[in-house]
Image (tube, chains in turn blue, brown):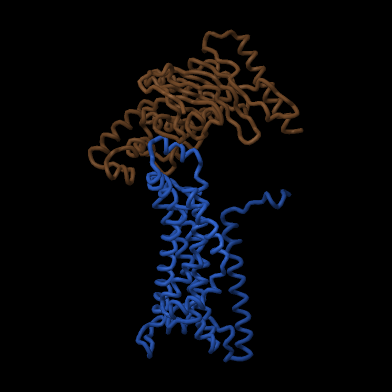
Length: 269
Length: 279
């Protein structure tokens, strides 16, 4: 018998092993849900899959009587727009400061301690400030995402720039590059895929800040809906919404990954 | 204040006057007095920590001298890298995000006087076409014409070094610095690279400095061999004495006995330093 650390699964075994936890959780839910519903058919805590399916179908196809919008898609759109704008702005800010701090020792000396300190501020603690300053509209939700993930992105990018081999900096200068050209021809193009990687890593936090902001003040959005129906203990809405958010997160991650692979064939990690 | 007559033609291409380099208490190089003429091919050998790489860095402008003077054509050497001094490192010399041809064209783009060239380091239209043609010719010379559109990670180690050499040569540098350029290559490939670098040197007439760990390589490549070694070793203060150039030999005219002596000296210093590390 070989040691456990040397046992490697075949492709099929790996697939089966990977699927097992999913199946286990589903089965567990099914059994628990059945048991509870058998005891009390009006139980709301663990709704049957059929109930959740009905609710989701209703939310995704019927127009809301109050607003005339289809709730599910309206929520999805509202959340994705906030997320997209927030992450986009963060990436742009990070690109600027990350490149500057990574490339220029003077900029690093000036800004790096500040970025590090800002990164330590818990963004959620600033949320009331944002609501006071920017009101309860869209701006404060976007700003929360920006404040939440930008320091991480800047620091990550600064680190990635500093990881560029010293040899490259010397070589580019012997080829006649000035400081500006070093950035545009050497640093920036090599940082784009790394920025996308960093954005992928920060998406989890971005969702967290989005849902938190929506939970406290919003009129629509995935996070808003979940916290709204919590009052009625509508697990038949909450659980499908959570699953949907997970799906969106996975799709976003895969899209970014594909973008990196397609746009930067030289970049391999 | 030094009084210098600008009209005076410098006596030597490169001149090192009592050059020394120290980091804090640690003396790396001391008392390097030597001159170099244009078109020489100098190989530099010595144990690790004996200042070969430091010397190369002073030549490239990565390091400044602590004492003495480095003059190039009578002027102190610039203290940051520039187009006069091309360089090839053992690794990371080429840009991973550019294809082979773009790696070579880059040098022409960066220094072009057009606005897009100065701002973004890009050439367009006929200028780019001409640059491409020039790069292609050089790539053919180094034997990479079959791989112009590949990325560096798709190339072998030897091919990457060929690319790095072509990339440096397109700028027609006055000095070409080679920092253990073939150290990571297989022996067979290394022999091919020796052939290539000798050909290119004869053709371009550029002055070459090459640091190598491989004594055999140093003993026959080029025109001149410099041995960096410590003259004094004080076991109580190992950092107090720096290394200097202990041998300056014309290549091809030296007896085998002397080579054996040098080999012995260099190995002795290496072991000596290992022992210091352990103790």
